[in-house]
Length: 136
Image 1 (cartoon, one colour):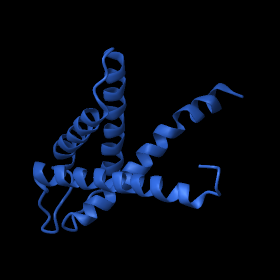
Image 2: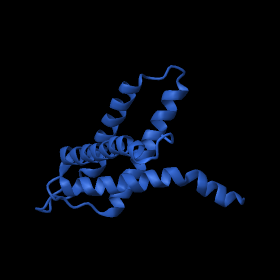
Image 3: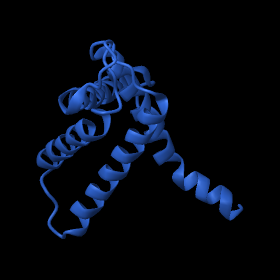
């Protein structure tokens, strides 16, 4: 296998995570007061969010004493919401044409995280039910 293909296969999960998170962010911007957010900003925020989450997970494991899972998840969500307020606030626009501000960006990020968590819980419940018995 060529090294380029190997690299692509290695990066594929990260690329898929960015693509899925971009869709959640775009949907969240629609849910939040019908605000407008360009795809390029949704993808940029998603890449930033996935990179931040990956670095956070790496630092958590590298520290030698990992945080409890619940605390790590809550910290990660808090960072994503704060990052959303900072990044999405001036880039997402309300129906009036004004930027949604830090609070609006944070709410868009929170809605995107909630959509991702809801899909994850739904998949965890439905996928085992759809598999033939003995394959779960």
